[in-house]
Length: 116
Length: 112
Image (cartoon, rainbow over all chains, first blue to last red):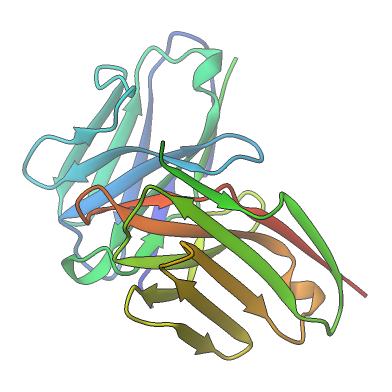
């Protein structure tokens, strides 16, 4: 079946540093990927839509200069949290629809970010 | 305002019983609704999709209903097992058809 991977699975960083999270579709190509964040015991909140070959589309209230998204190829999207602060600590999850539609989205295993 | 609410934060049932989870939405007109399972510290896993013109869908021990008049979906797990314990999320396709918006989730615990 379709598999989406994320790297790293967890990261701890100091306040003020930048962290890059990778999302890869392993056995299919994805022109679109989605990035979510999830707080403990809360639902997934869509942050942005990553588009291969063009700029990402950000949801209202998400700072695009803070959460940089680059869709480098048809199988890779990266999310960089710049100048991270403790309030950025969260569980970040990416997803990719297979077949060009959002009918079925395959989610990555998530990345736990802790900013000290 | 737009909302997607799931019936309760937590649901405890006995093994072998049927678990019924509810997803209610307001101010959406989704083309379809999806259910996902999420285990702690993991990403969601797709379970079932039901379209607006479908009343019911089944997959093994899972059954989903979709009532667009009531703006509600019910998710049933029959003959529940402890391995079914997880958080279950409903999601609607929104935003012009290219985004998923998730409900609040229900944590199911199946006890022996």
